[in-house]
Each structure stands twice: as structure tokens, then as C-alpha cells.
Length: 101
Image (cartoon, rainbow, N blue to C red):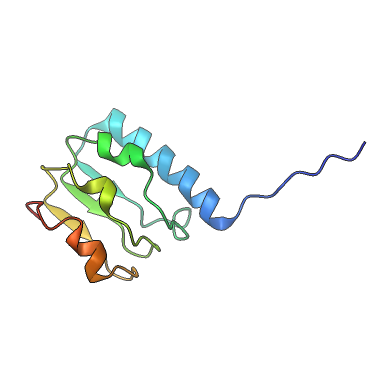
């Protein structure tokens, strides 16, 4: 019997790394989260778990492929979002227009 293992795409690996970073941030509760790592450079979608970071004040998304910011819409303590070198558009920015950032 031949078993084929599907290899994960770079985006899938980045998503798993992002989930791990979110879980670590939930434990630390330091108010900051950065996806500007080699592991998350191919991140195309924010894991919904990011919305559970109620204490998050600073989020670094630069150097990722994030376009959809809707998981952040309820994050009222968010003060800073770094979107440098992302393909974010005005549509993506309109998703967080009500936040205090």
C-alpha cells in the first residue's frame, strides 16, 4: 500500500505558526503580537483565535500577505497595527475603521 502525504503549503505552515504565536501571546498577556517572522511571512489569513486576545494593544502584520482584517473588528484595546509591506487595501482598512487605532 502506498500512502501519500500531502505536503503543507507555505501559507498553511504560516497559518499554523500564527496559531502558535497567538496561543503563546494568550499566555504572556503582554499586549503585543508580531507576525513579522520568517515562519509567518507567507501568512494570508488571520486565524480567528486572534480575536480572543482581549488585552492586545500592538499588532505587527508587516511583511505578510494579510488582506482581511475582519478578525480584529472587536479588539477595542488595539492601539497600533503595523501593515507595512502588506497588500492591504482600503476595503481591508474599512474593516477596522471603528477601532481606536
